[in-house]
Image (cartoon, rainbow, N blue to C red; front, side, top):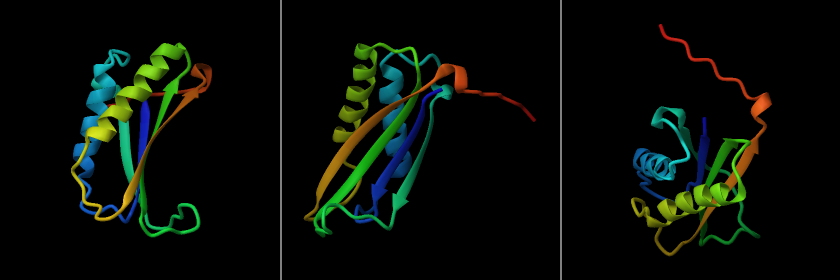
Length: 122
């Protein structure tokens, strides 16, 4: 079920998007808190219009937002956030010359009773 949205500033160049998503998915699955890899849905968005602080040019970001269903305890949520943060920090397949990059992970819980998923096959 986890839904993961990665956003990054467009002053990060040549970001290997599919590799980043794969690394994050693998890190999440390695926690043992996701039953099947196919339950992880990830996507990535490049932000062309952004502002950090008052517009300092030497700033960039990669922000991972993970949505999970309620039911995890604090230790499990920390484990997920730490695993994604570690994978994001280890990832180096991009270029950002003379830029300070903020690497962020945000975890949001979605109420289980409000979530619906239907799988159909054609």
